[in-house]
Amino acid sequence: MQTEVMKLLQIQYPVFQGGMANIAEHNLVAAVSNAGGLGLIAAGGSNAEQVREEIRKTKELTDKPFGVNIMLLNPAAAEIAKVIVEEKVPVVTTGAGTPEPYMKDWLEAGVKVIPVVASVALAKRMERCGAAAVIAEGCESGGHIGELTTMTLVPQVVDAVEIPVIAAGGIGDGRGFAAAMMLGASAVQVGTRFLVAEECIVHENYKELVLKAKDIDSAVTGRTTGHPVRVLRNNMTREYLKKEKEGVSFEELEQLTLGSLRKAVLDGDKKSGSFMAGQVAGLISKEQTCKEIIEELTNEAEQIIKKKSTELF
Ligand code: TUI
Image 1: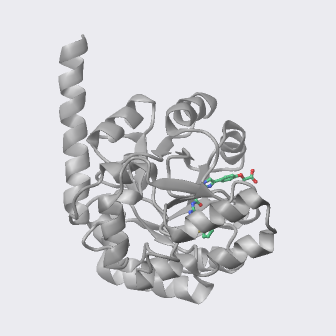
Image 2: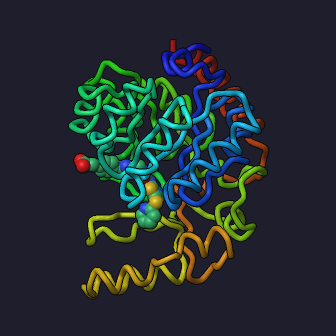
Image 3: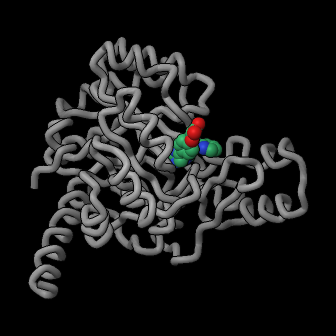
């Protein structure tokens, strides 16, 4: 296996770990990078100094490439952008917006910038402003999502840009991995399956909810506020969706979700936590190490592609 993204980033397997806010910290990141994938520190719910600390801790645990994911709605994004340069982080991925204000500084410092895009238009704009690759993320993903599915978004982005495309959203096993590569992706990004990795620090209740989830157990909150977020259904989401239908104010809806991701991650609060997860949760049934996950994904994909090609041609 040798894809363009693997060459670009000097990684052994074309597997990125999704930058899950408040979840993807140095232990998970180093485990993914040490297993040959690309671990990404999530800066989503953190300030600049917390991110600097996470970068330093990750460097103590791995000498393999890793990156930082910046959620651009984070009020600390501009300061975190500076930390990336100061700490000489080799790769940055961005989400929930456009990283254009930070591109000049990052490119001058030799940082490889890989924005998450949810449309062809943004992918083209990112290519023009110097992105090394783009992550095309479909709405099967957990957390903040766009409109299009992975199946439709990835090939349209692949056709629209020259830079490599990483597929994200709904990829949780070797079949999804193989399918994404067939759509033209050069790597995949996996979030939900790494939620149940042994090295992932989320509360046991979070892991249990993902492992027990069935196909239809996620819902999208915030469609009316312009911040659609996919989460596992629970009391909190049912109440949120009810209030959203009733047309309550943005402020009242925000009140419901305030701190709810931390309640899920740290306290395992099944009633009022926001358990962000993708639609692929229904397919995930066991806790494994990051190494086992990455090797199983790639081995399964290889077998499937070989079997299908003899079956079909
Ligand atoms: O960013 C994500 N997923 C996230 S961030 C997050 S943290 C959080 N979010 C909401 C409430 C509380 C905490 C949880 N999940 N994925 C990357 C992503 N980016 N998905 C979609 C997009 C996107 C959408 C529109 C990127 C750019 C865009 O348009 C930008 C523009 O200005 O055109």
